[in-house]
Length: 117
Image 1 (tube, one colour):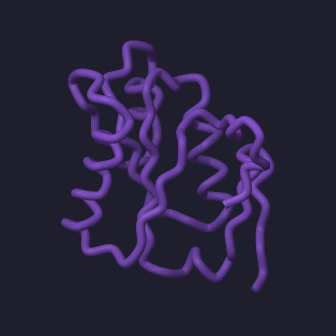
Image 2 (cartoon, helix red, strand yellow; image 1 turned 180 degrees about the vertical axis):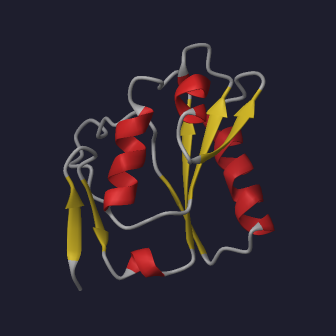
């Protein structure tokens, strides 16, 4: 199985996965300075079905997303990461995707982890 490393997100994803019916959901809150790097990293891995859920950000996240071709939904108030992910799964069900991958929108690997998915 071939793997491709996304340098800016430290994510390793099988290149075979990218050809499947997969929706990548990215919940964000005040990530206007980072979200474009995250989206670009996902695209570099070969995924084109990306849904960003802006969970009521008060920074420039919405304006940044509006300048891209990325599909995004905005909660009018901050409802929490769980609600943002739930919104993403609801859209995935409507779009009848086979798989959903949720990726943090902060471009920062978890503490103590290597960021490998």
